[in-house]
Structure formats: C-alpha cells, structure tokens
Amino acid sequence: MAKKVVIVGGGWAGSAAALAAVKAGCEVELFERMDALLGTGLVGGIMRNNGRFTATEEAIAMGGGDLFEIADAVSRHKGIDFPGHKHANLYDVCLIEPAVRKALLKAGVKIHLKARVRDIEVKDGTITKVIADVFHGDTIEVSGDVFVDVSGTAGPQGNCMKYGNGCAMCIYRCPTFGPRFSIAAKAGVKEIIGEKADGTFGAMSGSCKLHKDSLSPEIQDELNKTGVCVVAVPAFLQKSMESLGQKACQQYALKEFAENVVLLDTGHAKLMTAYYPLELLQQIPGFENARFEDPYAGGIGNSMRYFGMLPRDNTLKVEGLKNVFCGGEKAGLLVGHTEAIITGTLAGHNAARAAFGLAPIELPVSLSLGDAIAHVREKMQTKEGLTKKYTFSGSVYFDSMKQKNLYTTDIAAIKDRVESAGMTGVFAKKLG
Image (cartoon, rainbow, N blue to C red):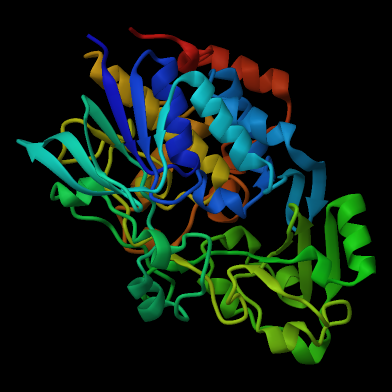
C-alpha cells in the first residue's frame, strides 16, 4: 500500500519537502492557502550569495538540488557582487513560481491551492488527517501517514499591527486568504517566538520591491545591465541604523545599506531595507516617481515574522509529536530561500523515511547544512540566541561558517566533502 506524506504550506520549504518525499517514493499532497506557491519567494530573488553558494552545492551533490537548479535557470543575473555579498544569482520573480509548480506537478505532487488547512484529527501524538477549506469551494479532508508543517511564522494581521507598523499589505495577503495555520500547534505543541534585541517579539521582513518603471531611466539601465544599482542617500535623508536592527535579514544590517539605496534586479527593483518612508525616498535623485510593489505600504513597514517556530530535533522531527516534521521558518531562526529549501528537503526526506518505517537521518556537522541545522537549534535554547537570526549569507552564522572552514566556492571540494560524509545522492534515492 502506498505511503502518503501530507505537506501544509507551499513556500520554498513546502515545495522542497514535496519533491524530496515524492522522490523517496511516497504519494504527496500539498496544501497552500494562497493562489500560488513559494510565499516570500514570489518577491525574493537572491540565491548563492556568500555561504549560500556552499550550501547550494552541497544540496546538489546530495541529490536535493532541483529547486536551486530551477532558480539558476531563471536567473536574470549570475555571479554578481553588492555590499557585503559576493557571487549572488538573482532569479526572476515573474518566472520562478510557474517553473517550480511545473516541476512539482511533473514529479507527481498533488497540489491544493487556495486551500487553507483549518483543523486536524490527532490521537496519541499522531496526526491522522487534515481538514482544509477551499477558497469559494468545498471542504477537503485528507489522511496521511506522515505530515510536514511548513506553514511559516508570519501573520496574522494582529501580529503586524501589534509588533510592527500595521498591515503593510505584503505578499502573504492574510486579509484575502486567511492567516497561517500550524498543524503542530493545533496538536498541542507550543510554538516558539523570536525576539528583537530589545526584547520585543518578531522580526520585520528585510526588503521591499519597487516598480522598476517608476525609477529614473539611468537607474533602470544600470539594473538591467549589471543587476545592481547603489545610489548614495543625501546626508540629511540618511536613515538611522535603528530601523536596520528590526530586520529578519541581519546580513543587510550594515552601514552601507543606511548610507545608500541598494537595489537589485529581480524583475522588480529589490530595495534592500525593511521599509523606506515614501516622502523621503522620493527626495533622492532618480526616485522622484518611486512606487512600491511589495509591500504596497512599504513606506511605513513590512511583514512581521518568526512568531511560530517549533521545537524540533536535528532530523527536523517536531518534539512532542510522533509523525510530524518541520522546515523553513518553522524549523527555527534560519533566514532565507536557500535555508528554507534545505530544511524543507531534509524534512520531506525524513517524513518519507518515517512513512516507510526507517529511522530519520541527521546531516553531519562536517557539512554546512548539518552544521547550520544543529547550530541554530543549540542557539535557540538561550534567550540571547532567540534575539539573533542565522543565515548562510551573513551575520553571525556566516562568521561561524568561515571560522569552521565550511565556506568555499570550490565545487569539486564540496563534492568531495559530501562524498566523505557518505551523503552523495542521499536525497535522490527511492526508499520504497
């Protein structure tokens, strides 16, 4: 009898989990409350910068590189540098979601869009069924052997109102499709809330998107040609570093991002700050007609995240439940698309292993992937650790990664490292 893995959440982590579980030989059904996959990936765009290059190549060598290869294929610019970051790829936000959805469907994943899970059936620490409402449609009930909670940590609107600057009308679209729903929390697991340095809760999403056509022809040309445009901010307009400290993406909390407007070309003009008051932005030469694309109220704030992480072990099994794994932001204070794909891949693979009665795997710390997963879990046991954010691309984890000699752009060396760890092709193997 076929084994079924049910995935709740269709962001980068959910999409990765779906591919990993189906490659391992399970039937997979994925529920996404919105009308498209990828979540923040719909407006993101940065891959392979700094230590993410290493992490990406490790994942590819391990047989879990499908989504990275899709992102590479639709990149507008490759190998670019911008302040604090090297060798980044910028994927086209207009092309990425259809390409990922096509890959999932081709692999055999059954996708339910506009289907918000609202309830579960659970017995003795085992979830057996999810119940979802389809937007303007019927209720769906789906049973499964193992479940993956990749529902994210942002929203609902109340969190943005209380801990941010109000609902900034971001890509999550809570007013339309409803707030996130965690099956693990519904089953009784207490979620973990991240904190800012001042002790308040959550973290603000780290970038905005401007309509490229609203910028000056000179800025547009520079973006289209090179992928990057850095514009000095007049001294009287420069923002304080205080707003940068609110960001989830602490790798961009550098003075270069306060003294300049840093733009990246992802199809939109990606503005590397959490928000920028429109009345100030439009005083900068070249931005006189600037208009926000995401969030639409990017002049006052951004989405608030890290309100619903889950306690988990280093196999990404949720503590307190027998058949639930987690990935993406649910798995802890790991920030970014690359980080979500990696944790989602491990969660999906281990969910399949559990469905077939096999022990889940823990990635060795000799690999950056295993080290990051273990490092974040360890740090989150302390109050100070809950105030920091971790990513392969900068800030405290990238520093740690370099100190441990895990960062390299030598692809042959990365393949050898994965081989030495006994992990080559592990995510590509069919288990049943």
